[in-house]
Each structure stands twice: as C-alpha cells, then as structure tokens.
Image (cartoon, rainbow, N blue to C red):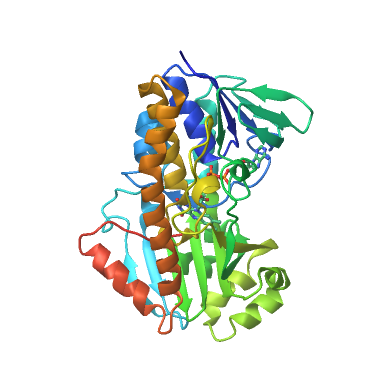
Length: 374
Ligand SMILES: Cc1cc2nc3c(=O)[nH]c(=O)nc-3n(C[C@H](O)[C@H](O)[C@H](O)COP(=O)(O)OP(=O)(O)OC[C@H]3O[C@@H](n4cnc5c(N)ncnc54)[C@H](O)[C@@H]3O)c2cc1C
C-alpha cells in the first residue's frame, strides 16, 4: 500500500524528498512556515557534490535544470593570509569542474517548480507533532503514515526521537553583503575573484563568496565563548576592530558592505547523533545532523538523505523496513561528515592559519576531491 507522507519543513531537504517521492508516485505534503518561496533571503551559494547533492538531483530528474542554473566559474577558490598575500589560488578549470556552484535561491526555485501545485503548504507553521499527526498554528491537523522532520537545526520533530540539542561551536559568523560589485566595489570584487575566498588568521577569518547577480556575501568568522555576545559585533566599527590587523583591502569587505550585518552563531548536534527507531517518524538534513559549514556538506547531505529516504520508501512494502534501511546508511554517513566538519573548523583557525587549510587544499588539488566550505 502506498504510504501517506507529511514533511515538516520546505528547505532543500524537505523539497527534495517531496520531489523524489512524486517521481516514484508517492504523494506527500510539505508544511513550511515561510509564507512563500521568496519570503526571505535564501542565503549564499552552494557547491553540489557529485556523490551527494548532484546524485539527489539525478534521482529527482532535475540534473539538467541544475546545470542550466549553475555557475562553473564559481568553483574557483583562493586562500589568503591576513596581510592579503595569496597562499593558494585555484581556478574553476583547475578544480576539475565537477562541483559547480548554484545560488540557493535558484536551487530552491527549481525544486518548488518541479512539484505539483498544493504539495507545499506555505505559511503552515507546525506547532505540535505526534507520530502520524501534525498540528499547525492555524489549528489544522495533518495526518499521515509517516512524519518526516526536515525542519532544520531547531526541529520540532526531533524531540520525539532524541533529547539532543545543537551546541555552540565557539565560532560565530557575522554576515555582510555587497551588491553590484564589479561596478561599485571593484577592490573586493578583484580580491574575491569568481568563486570563494578565505582570508584566515588564528581564531578569525574573512570568508567571501561571489553569488549570482553581482553580489558578494561575506562571513566574518570570530571566536566568541558566548554566542550571545556576537550580536554586539553586528556593528561595522566593532567588527572592524576585531580585524584591525587585517589588510585594508580585506577590511574593505566589511567596511564597504551594505545593509544590516547578521550574527550567525555556528551550532552543531553531537557527532554521531542517532536515535532508536520510533514507528512512523524520522528526520533528515539539519534536523538529524546539523553541523558547522566547514565540510561543505550540510545541504548536500540533506538532499542525499531525502533522495535515499524516498527511494527506500519506494523499494519497501512497509514504512518501518524503509526507515530502518534509510537510517542504517544515513547515521554513519552523517557521523563521518560531522567529524570532518568539526576537524576542519579547528584546522581553519588554528595557530599558523591559513597554513593547515593551504596544506589540505594543495593535497586535494593534487588529485583528491575537495572538502571545504562554507
Ligand atoms: C553560513 C552557512 C554556510 C553554509 N554553507 C554550506 C555549503 O557551502 N554547502 C553545504 O552543503 N551546506 C552549507 N551549509 C549548510 C546548509 O545550509 C544546511 O545544512 C541546509 O540548508 C540544511 O537543509 P535542511 O533542508 O535540512 O534544513 P533548512 O534549510 O534549515 O530548512 C528547514 C526548513 O524548515 C522550515 N521550518 C522550521 N521549523 C518549522 C516549523 N515548525 N513548521 C514548518 N516549517 C518549519 C524552515 O522555515 C526551513 O524552510 C551552510 C550553512 C551556513 C549557516
């Protein structure tokens, strides 16, 4: 019998699940609290890995749409020290062209447009969850054989399965943006190049990514023992004081930025987070394994989890066997990525930075797949 599936959260994970289920003839409903797909800024750019994010798009039948919207030149990567000296510089061609970048907004649009009208219920905030049943803020109830928590780091579904909560990593980002960079900000545009740039020192860094439409998104990475204190750094003058010993060219990424600065404490679930099987409920993506962005895996894993869960549901006659098969593959995969992401966070900002990241990237450039981000 075809199960009914209720998905909490219409991020990249939840939408990929709905899409792959749809291609296999399994209906689902996605409850998403945002009022529309364009309700908020969708964030920067992502490189989708062949073995995870792109594999999910193959299963979703959307690889062509992805390729048409992706930016191959966005794969370029530069690593600088705090004086602005370039210590590693890889063009998109040299990186092998297997991991093109795509703006999150564009990827989300592709997924939303691939779903029949009505699959995503926008403005549907889930306020209570029980096996087989979601309650929305409106009081409406959604019933289903399977409830999937694809609702991110602060999942409402996770407490049914596990008492774990994301812990603070000790590192926070302050996000800034520059628009129309080739015209209005030629210095930052030249410094960042076509892809991503990491300027690293011990415990601090300026990470910048070029996105579509002439934007650069900057993440100023700072070590703060208390995540609440990072809000004080969402002020250009205070933030620039933290980077007083960085070159003027690098500081321009903050000084010339526009609009409000957004504090983003980096949090993660314990490495190896898992739960005992509970009939009719599971998690995917950040709800299951939110990690720091330093392995560049979060969105890739959310999409792969989603595709594999959909394939398991299509392949098994009963929901429980499908969930057991899905979780048996997902738990160790997430554990490995979470460990690598925690290790990378430490290596990126270790004494002598950016030496460890330069060494890692030089090694990968010599023939291994890339493992970096955000
Ligand atoms: C600064 C930064 C940079 C990153 N860079 C990368 C990168 O380069 N590569 C990469 O692979 N990953 C990266 N990540 C990680 C990536 O963003 C996440 O892992 C990914 O978005 C997780 O997708 P998801 O669908 O699981 O969750 P989310 O994207 O968080 O989606 C969850 C959805 O659930 C909805 N929701 C939440 N609660 C409710 C509720 N109660 N009711 C209804 N809806 C609800 C939310 O509105 C949201 O739409 C980065 C993260 C950060 C913070």
